[in-house]
Image (cartoon, rainbow over all chains, first blue to last red; front, side, top):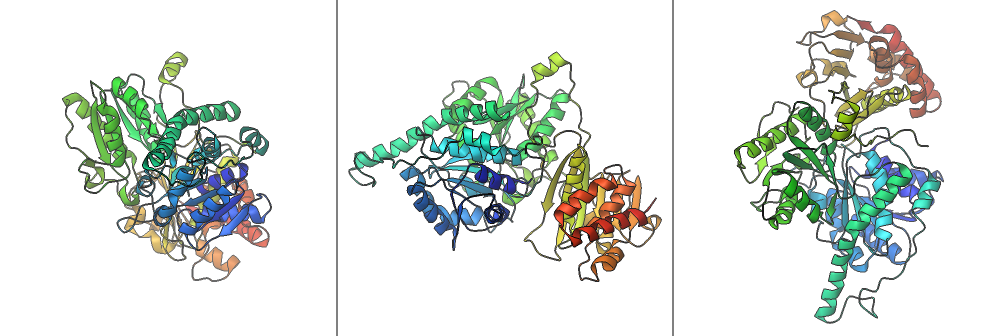
Length: 391
Length: 211
């Protein structure tokens, strides 16, 4: 089962009731799979064909306000086209779930993934959870409804996964039993969320507006714990869990860690295992939750390791500070008295593959930084080095 | 419906020390398929993955193509392992190549990175000894799959060669048993088309030549 099929089954098992969607590579197979599940009578949902992504989100908002459990998905330019509407669900506290099937933005890039399409929505208020493989996709879609619909949260959730390397990559995947999912995820009961006391519309004095925004911020704060809680409960029931917002992998006694997001994490697991086997002192941290950002978790990592190397599959033009994730990590670490070295790599841009050699290169560079106590450059564009592996 | 999980919680280093487990280099088989859109490289790799899974192996299929269209070049990465497969990167130094179209056999980009001692299974009328890959291979196998396609599916601009290649693979490698391929083929192509593809698969098994 590939990532797109897994997402479709996640929506089916979660008993999503309304699916407004518009196709775009590499998300197309996801919504065509949902259409097939509905037409074969396996899934009971209203599928709304729309004329574009903006309308898909508008229809999703309408259905969610009416009390339905809503699922949709998009990618790249589609997410960008939808953006105007994307601000509505967090502000109106609507727990819509939308898969962002990561694909590079045009024009410098192809149909394959980098994370800029989802990361540029970081300020809209959506929860973003990045998945590594199809198993994590199906599990995270189910968890996302539970997280978003929790009355302490009431926020939309975006499970994100890389186009092709997850969306079209078929691996053995467990489909949870419907009855067990039903026990885990009860039907959605919609309550109109009072954005401001006595009102449903975000108008009023400036302090009221600030209060309403602060409410969304507090919901993100609470979501940190709830994401972990939901993951733990899922683990107890289904035997698989993902350690909440971040996972430390093979880190025992390591001096430095690589921080990865999305499908490259699986590749990095193999490389890190081999390097640990050779006595190299480097571990791996998988960043699953980008929003809410695991600030405290990174501070804990900063106290444990001498260097944190962030692998960004995105870039922010003109930032002069490297990739988006590294900027977030830098902000988290700034509060520490004794800060670790912060190393930053940009790789997989525009949808290029992130290879084992590139990961080994990044790990070696990080260990060199630990040894010399110096970071060579603010950001290293890994693909500009010839590592002899390009097809 | 639960079969087994693609994800598994790895043991911590502490647990490994207690259990006396040494981290091992994984003995994954990495195969690269090359074909043209419409020949069935993606479906062929998926059928092989499902067949391997039915034999208790772990498998992973990653297709690489631009927009989906007939005639464009298609590359598919396939990994087989006895443990769950975690890496998602492309395959640059394959243990084996499967080439679905004779026009691609001489293409340098197709041959690139094939390991010395590796395996090449080619849609090719020539004898294996007449094909030069520039590296010493452990095994070269040729099967005239375009002819089988014409015979079973009619003459087409883009011949369907995937299931014939799968039969050849079953004969010359230890990746899969011929019989394990039939159910996934029938699942992929229900009805008469499925039976024709099973026949193509058997034909590939019969006529493949190896050296």
